[in-house]
Length: 166
Image 1: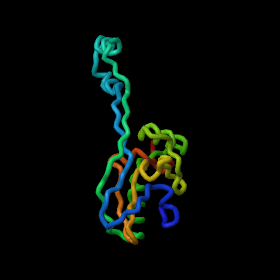
Image 2: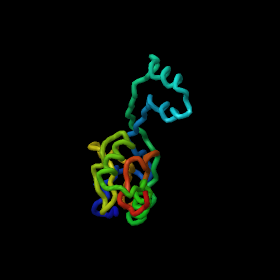
Image 3: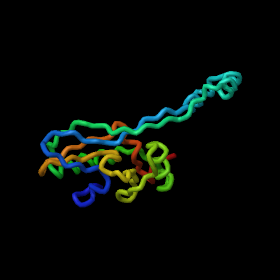
Image 4: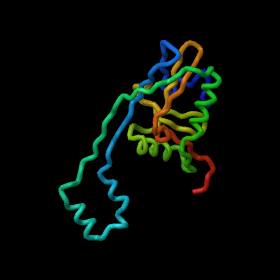
């Protein structure tokens, strides 16, 4: 669980100079040239061979952007921690072990392997430029807090060994 003592280790923390401001987060956009493979069962053998042999095969492209989000600091510390813990509990779940979850976060986020462990069964990714490269930013103005999460925050963490059936 996120607490007053540890939350800055797991989320991006950005101080504000007023009750409303802009939080900055690293965003990622990519195109997957092999996405056509998802529909391969609907294609004829000739269509598959034509696609593989064509010169239209693209390379995967990846772009990183710093995105800004408006945030209002209108929560107390306890309200912010409660809300942040609710968000963490919505990460995808798997009955598989920790090693699977760590690697799955790397695949899903396209950022890196999960490098933070929260509690006994939650792993998440927070980049080395931690205040920007994270699943959620906590903004602080005085004793008031605000939260903004990545549009695809669920790709940055996973709850493993949760007891669900495979």
